Image 1 (cartoon, rainbow, N blue to C red):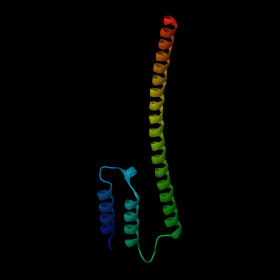
Image 2: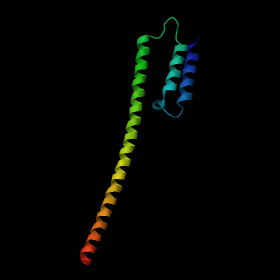
Image 3: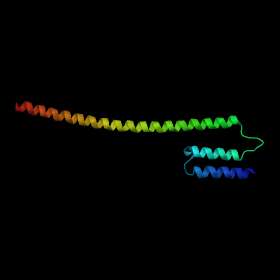
Image 4: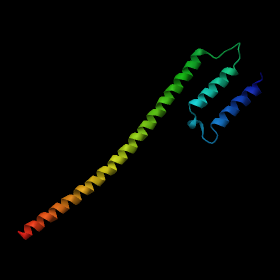
Length: 112
């Protein structure tokens, strides 16, 4: 197999899966495609070093966990914003109720 065919196969795999998205948008499916392409096109007389493959898998696992954590933090931020908005509405409601009670007390005192 020539180097040109390996390059063409690898290039077409990466461009179809991440067109217009950049490297940051690559996910698990893209990683599996790249890994299988790498394994299919490796030289049988010089296979990929197991240490390198395990390091790549560990890096991908770490990246996946960091992405999950980012999503969770985004959700927490959204919930905090919602709670802040609810708190502001409750403060407004509490202020309004206090004013109503104060005006009723003033009216009751004035009538008595």
